[in-house]
Amino acid sequence: EFFDFFEEQSAFYGSVFIFYTFCSTFTIFNILTGIFVEKAFAASGPDREEMILLERKKLMGQMEQFLQLCKEIDLDTSGTISKQEFQEGMKDPRVVTYLYSLGIEMHDVDLFFDVIAKDDGEVSAQEFAECCMELRGTARSLDMKKQIAISQKMLWYLEELLSQAAPPRDNREL
Image 1 (cartoon, helix red, strand yellow):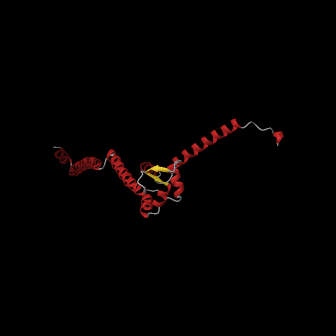
Image 2 (spheres, one colour):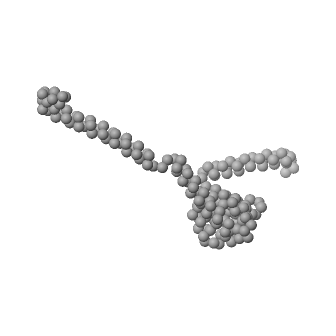
Image 3 (tube, helix red, strand yellow):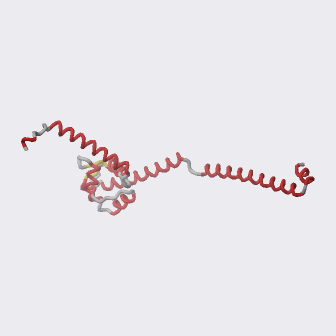
């Protein structure tokens, strides 16, 4: 009916009406197709919870593998790793390569073990594995800022302690 009305007026108006109808229909179908594709793409991609679960599984797998490696380092099967056992373990290229693959570069074996073992000279295989997993990768600026803040606080406490312990000096004694 609309076409007949425009056709009666002029052939040009009929052509314009057909072109307008085609463009409008084409635009509507493009919009609907875009919405459908967007929804399908969103539904096909992994959601955030699935990504978190996959990353946790990966970390747990790495932890299990590393724990098994730590048990191999524990030569006397006591459940703890001593500095000597760690030094011997670091001679095994598998251990060095695995640590490197986790992002743990070892430049000073003694210092690395002392940081992990603290004062007692031995550390359980589980604790050793957990500490190594925490030390993966490079230090982030947040880690550095945290260490600077702790050092500054310790320096302040030490200065406070020294000022309370030592009486003020008399300049005449110098």
